[in-house]
Length: 289
Ligand code: ADP
Ligand code: BMX
Ligand code: ZN
Image (tube, rainbow, N blue to C red; front, side, top):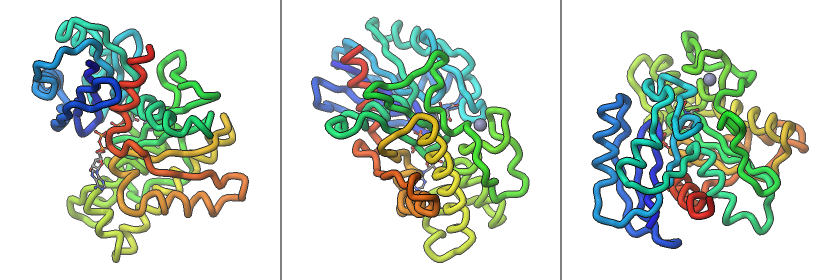
């Protein structure tokens, strides 16, 4: 049996998978300090199932069994944290790890492979992640960074005047405009009270300023899509993450893409695996590798 783990900036999910079947699934909030994370990991993986392989989809980039944050505001202790070793000791079996968006890209490619060889998966979630399938292969890259579209820059600015820098240290990153964290930050600054990303989406129905924050984010996403198309050439973009799958977000991104010349009008579709795209992709990857 495979134990698949999806470690995001907000939630930590586990699924026990036998062949193609998910036997059990559990989720706890992600913890952002090492001791809290280790306790949450023990809690979410507690079971008597015989685990033969652990498949990990984790936020951050992975190299030699260790994980690093690009945006250190998300998980401050992800600075070469030996995640692989922790899991190998706990389960005494092989551990296969991928970045969360790369894993989801693989999971979303599988049901589309009859008519696609090249696609971009984007998660709009705590951060903004991306995964690339090129010529039917998942691109990981020599640093594990392939697809990190959240830290490519865009030419629209965040709508809060004191946005400052992205947690990766640069200014102008897509993630600083279109992640759940960035949407909440902009809404809180503009409305003068604490507003999270979920509330922003409900306000957007009849509040033009809330809608403008989402449209600006969608334009930033569309710019990143157009740039990726021009750099590697793709056939489809799959959107996932709680923000990407929130009411109306795909329509806003499509509208922004359609404002570009026809050459840039790629299909943008929703993740078929919904919130489980990363778990499913990691599990399949671990079965093959
Ligand atoms: P993770 O980043 O752990 O993979 P998610 O994909 O759930 O997790 O993304 C978390 C982000 O999505 C948070 O910023 C949260 O506020 C936001 N979010 C969660 N649910 C919704 C929703 N229904 N609508 C809009 N934003 C949401
Ligand atoms: C960040 C980066 C990516 C990740 C993306 C989405 C960190 C910790 N993570 O850009 O590796 O794929 O967020 O991740 O720097 P999530 O936390 O939103 O699921
Ligand atoms: Zn950045």
